[in-house]
Every structure is written in C-alpha cells, then in structure tokens.
Image 1 (cartoon, rainbow, N blue to C red):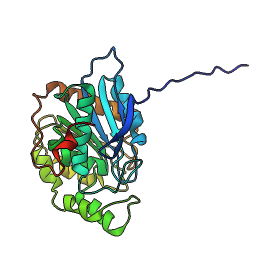
Image 2 (tube, rainbow, N blue to C red):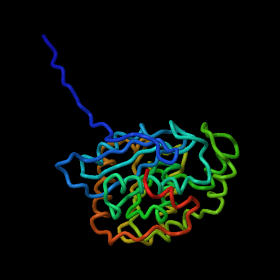
Image 3 (tube, rainbow, N blue to C red):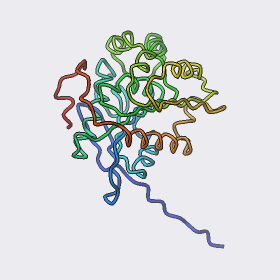
Image 4 (cartoon, rainbow, N blue to C red):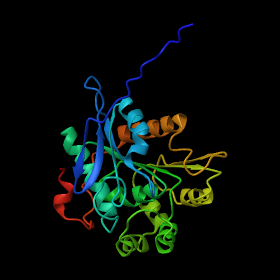
Length: 262
C-alpha cells in the first residue's frame, strides 16, 4: 500500500540580517492581510531566535508582524550581552516599525525567562502597548547566574549587572501602563511559579492577568500551541484597545541613532 506524503511549506522570514550588531529574523503577514501590529520576541538565557520561529509563524497567521533576534552573546549577534540589553529591545521595535513603514505601529513584547524579565523592564523604552512574560526570571536570579558562571553565553557581567542591580521588577510591573500577561508552569524547575504569583500582586494596568499551568517545566509553555494562541489573542486585544503610542521614555542608555531602524 502506497503511503501518502504531505508536503508542508512553512512560512519563512521576510528578512534576515544584522541591525546594530543584532542578528534578527523579521516576519510579515501575507500581503492580503492587514498588519494589525508587531511583536518583538525575546528568547531566554542560552537560547536563540530560531527557537521562537514557531511563535513568529503563529503571529503572522494572526496578522501581526514579528521580529525574533539573538540577544548579544547569543546566536549570530555581535559581542557579549552588556549594558545595552534594554536599549536593544527598543532597537528591534524601531526596526519593526521602520520595516512596516508605520512609525506608530503598535508593538507588543513577548519574552521567555530572561527575555520575560527584560521585556517587562524594556516596555517603556520600546513604547510597547502590551507585554507577555513567560516564566520570567528575576533580576536577582540573573545576577546570581552571572556571578556563578552558570550561564553558557558571553557576557559583560559588570555591564549587565549595572542594569539588573538597579531594576525592581515588582516596581516595574506596578509602573506598567499597558496590559501584562504572565504565563508560568507550576512545575517550573528553574524559576518558581511563586515568583509570577508575587508579580501578579503588583498588577496595576487594566487587562493584566496571570495564567498558571499545572505541571510542565521551564520551557513547556513557550512552544505549547494552545498557550501560544492565548498569548496571541491577548496581544490582539491589547493592541486593538491601546491609545496612540507615546514617545519612548528618554532615560535610555543607547544613542538616538540606535532607535532609527537599520
């Protein structure tokens, strides 16, 4: 009996390249779709942009442009991760808006673990309208990992520590003026679920919510199709209801040129 073979043509990035030394993959909805907004995707410690191409495909299917990028010290990006980590997120948001030809394109941030922490901290700098943080690491935990050498990526430890030491993630959540979705697996063996539960107690922005999934592990949520769909729905709702974009806060550490697109 002859077996049927099904050919799957998965969407590919519309553009790849380097921007300010950051390797990225940029994804756009098909021409017949209206681009409803964009999402900057931040990976976790020791990961890379390709690990989140599945999520980028889910985003473009929903009419959202996306950019996944290698944080410094990871993948094909240049140099160690350093004190530019938050400004790099804003650079990617600027690149997405520039490529779409829409300076006011509403942007959301979606980060996992270390990326979740950075997404919360960089939301104001990037002019984000919504944030999704999956099993977000704490600044304290990241500092410990850097100090003990637990992380297997190149880092300017003093530069990163300067950012993390001055960061209060609980305070950042309280100050957020855009919806925040926290997703956490109860079985997370690296970042205890209690961390997200404590962060949720500091919600102030309307529409924020916490979803705790029974069982699982530190990486299980980010690739779960049902939970990806839940985060896409959350982002679509937040971007649709968001007011006109405010200019990013001026307290950035990178030069103005790094936010003009590449």
